[in-house]
Amino acid sequence: MMARALMGLVASLLAGSSVQAAPFEETVLPVPTAPGVAVQPYVRIAAGQLAFTHVRLIDGTGAAPREDMTLILNGTRIAAVQPSTAAIPQGVTVLDLSGRTVLPGFVGMHDHMYYIGRPDLDAQGHSELPLVVPQMTFTSPRLYLSAGVTTLRTTGSVEPYTDLNLKRQIDAGTLPGPHMDVTGPYLEGANSPFIQMHQLRDAEDARRTVAFWADQGVTSFKAYMNITQAELGAAIAEVHRRGLKINGHLCAVTYPEAATLGIDNLEHGFFVNTQSDPGKQPDRCSEGTGTPTLAGMKPGSPEAAGLIALLIEHHIALTSTLPVFEQSMPARSPLQPRVMEVMTPEAREAYLYARNARVLRANPTFETAYSNELGLERQFVAAGGLLLAGPDPTGNGGVVPGFGDQREVELLVDAGFTPVEAIRIATLNGATYLGLAHRIGTLAPGKDADLIVVKGDPATRIADIERIEITFKDGVGYDSAKLIPSVRGRYGEY
Image (cartoon, rainbow, N blue to C red; front, side, top):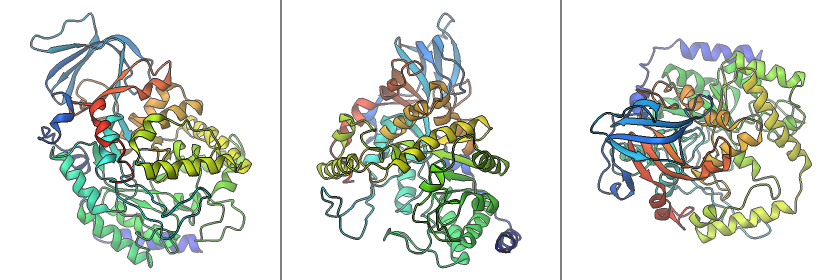
């Protein structure tokens, strides 16, 4: 009865007057603007007629790398991909990139612009309320760009006006950063732990919230943990009426319920599906927040096959965010000096407190859940599902913008994907979900010149994905060695 009533609500909302779809492509990938005065110090190579010779090419399709290739750029677009023995047109500047690999820019599909702060956190894990979420408007875009992210989805905003204004300044060449699909404020229900989030009152409030922020210019939406089925159904109807997409980090609503309602994308892989959690009540987040369900859902089991078939039948994508869950595995995530160096002393201390505490608290149920997640992601892809990639950089200092996107690719390889498959998930799959695969996500003539120059060979040593030297966005090459020092010691502050 509840399901029929909810679908009736969705149908009635969809029956309203149609709204013209927002020009999503033109908004996310606007006409390129030359870097302004404040951006120029981070430009290593200006846009122009360029030929990168003797490179290893990973094109993003999942195909095997091609050795000793030449990639020719004509300003903001890729003009040609050819063997290095082929002739190069006159007037083209030639750059010998021997020993380098060129691949598409990452399309980060869970890339926030904020940091979660826990006031007065101590070594025992105690902190004071309220939980706060400071915006990282300066550091995050630079870190993403330096690490190879050329397009991202914010996947939940705490300061949506800030994110919208940031995007406009990046697009205008005033600030450095990636292309942005700006997600609206969290569509959250009652009892949220986040003091900065609006808590929806009912389905009509959900619809109005979506309508307001779509009018402000956001290009995607995210449902959050405590949203109810009625609120989610109303939000989905309004989002789709606007020609946009909605993602969900759910808990009160299960994956099968969200699939029936028509959600487009589920965040965090299978981690937050609560359908089999003990004591789960309709429209209420369970105590286990999905871990018991995942720990009991073995890859290859009838339960897993049934859920995956349901998701694929409803054309629902999944976003893998393995780095944020790796942090809950005692001593599993690497302690990287480069990550520690960009953080403030306070953020670094908080991270190390949390990291040390996890070493003392083994959680076999979570470890089983993590192992199952790896297998379920492989099973989902093998069945034809669209898997996306993002790190979810929030308040855990082990997951930092950009560096976390690289770590996600490494963890996809740990999960059993080949390096070129993992790179495809982090590039072409995101572009496909966004409807932008004709512009970005692969390296081919006519595509946008959004690409990464990596020292080494990530196809045989995936850790080389961290050795990014230049990120090209719209044909402009940005210098990682200049962007990263500009934020050193500041992530967690601004």
